[in-house]
Amino acid sequence: MRFIVSFLISMGLLSVPTLTFAQPYIKLHRKAVLIDTHNDVLEKAMPKGLSFDHDLKGKTQSDLTRFGEGGMDIQIFSIWCDGNDKLPFGIANRQIDTLYTTAARNKDRMLMVTSPASLRQALRQKKLGAMIGVEGGHMIENDLAKLQALFDRGARYLTLTHNVSTPWATSAWEETHDSLLHQPKGLNDLGRKVVEKMNQLGMLVDVSHVGEQTFYDIIKLTSKPIIASHSSVYQICPVPRNLKDEQIKAIAKNGGVIHINFYSGFLDSTYDKRKNAFIQSHKAEADSLKLADMPGYRMEEYIAEKYAAEADALRAPLSAVIDHIDYIVKLVGINHVGIGSDFDGIESSPRYLDGVQDFPIITRELLARGYRKKDIQKILGANFIRVFKANMP
Ligand SMILES: [Zn+2]
Image (cartoon, rainbow, N blue to C red; front, side, top):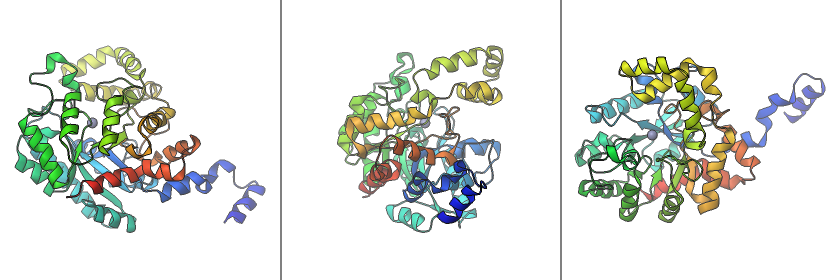
């Protein structure tokens, strides 16, 4: 092969940039187990009547073919609805139904993963291992039997809150906005029972979105390593939902893993200001959408899609993702960082990371920063596998 390639180059029939398949980072990326702990394509596609086993290029950041192109081995699909939605347990179950039927339609390409054994099976069979993570404790409707039911259907992590607090756990958003908070900060009795039951079942406790008091209540209580499924570093980008140094150290001490979120606004501290100016420049349209009762995040998504070139200019630099990974490695070592992209849950991703097909770029950039093969394998997936195994009963 190498001979043919150099022959073609010498004949001027092949230019060097097309040789990416021969580059060491591609080989390393294909060999490593890639696990992304947070993807929202179910919630993104379902309301539009789309399914991610179809070609959704131009419509979403993910689909089955692009997972393959990006070298994805295990994708944890986020089950999500807003904390104010009615009947959230029902919504969660409909999204889980959709994931199971999609996997059943694509038996030759997908396998549902609920244990380290089925994870290994998916890797052996070279299929996309699909896992379920429930993003928001509101979906258990204050009922431990519903927590059990979601576990029985295959959910392997629960993010204790989304932005709206549950009656038993306060969120990062509400803990940092006094006017929104109508309960004591942290976990109450039911909250503690939820964590204990999750530990018993082997369901990972996810602290992305939870408030600091809730976070420290969990850390004190949990008997198993925890994860942040999609959070970044507060010290670099101070938004309420990113993790402060003391929290990162506490997760390391607990043996857990922080999976870096790719949202421009969680990576780049200048993003929010620039985005607000952009929305402001389309104020009349934004206001009319708000009057039409569109939630703020949907309005921003709409404006970003409509004025795509302007939105594109706001994106965080690619180096920002690596900076966040690097920061955690320098603070607590290589064993506590992973990838939780949040693709299809974010209206802006870093430059060059347009969707799940672009994960090899992360490997390339880590190599360029001097990370060794073994370290890169830990970041891409091995750290998560360690925590997943440690949570088994
Ligand atoms: Zn989220």
